[in-house]
Length: 310
Image (cartoon, rainbow, N blue to C red):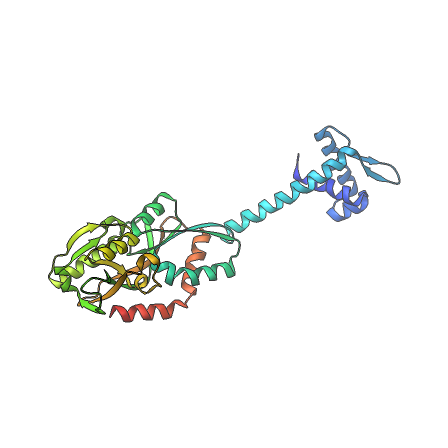
């Protein structure tokens, strides 16, 4: 059953006049009559009753009129949706992000995205760098907001923000009343760190700072969950690490028993980057990258983090 024949039939069914329907379709009346006859042969029943003065639909024609309207409407909707997706103006974008990106990058970027592309559906998941890169590689994510520029050639990346790292201790810790401490003083402390694969850039920044300070960190525990780290340091005299962005956020109930201590000489820092697959040239991805670039209320946050990093 051809869509063209259905469109001709709907015109006849709505006009109940072959002349007006033909004019509406910009067809000659004999051609329109031939199309209706072809449709009737296709479905095997009479759809239109014609006389010299009147055109009426048969009961079968009345049923097909409603069905044909729905078919044509759905077909046009499908065409429109496919075009919008091809142009990057519709579809679903799956974004991975870390805590700092959720605080500093995503709110402005997504507000911009929603303003210019309201038909794009955004799915988000908060993860560390390692899981995000694995999800990007497998195709489970479209864009990641991670610490560090991945070395793998399968990814493209763009730096967004320099983020200092701080120490996290419990309120009973000997450092709890300090506002800052030199990195070298970590030599006498038991520390909690995560596995490198979870966030290579942050892991390396901490160890490079230790090397520059001439110390070796005493890693007593490995925990990959920042919330679990906060709980652990709140009950044991240990030192964890976090981004200054996480440290500056409003404390949750689980973090109310921890305090942050700025680190200096040197200040360990990580680079927050947006990452996507090198072979992913879809317009929807390019649109989101453009929204990140154009959503520049980020400037004040960048200046703040840069001052902290100095």
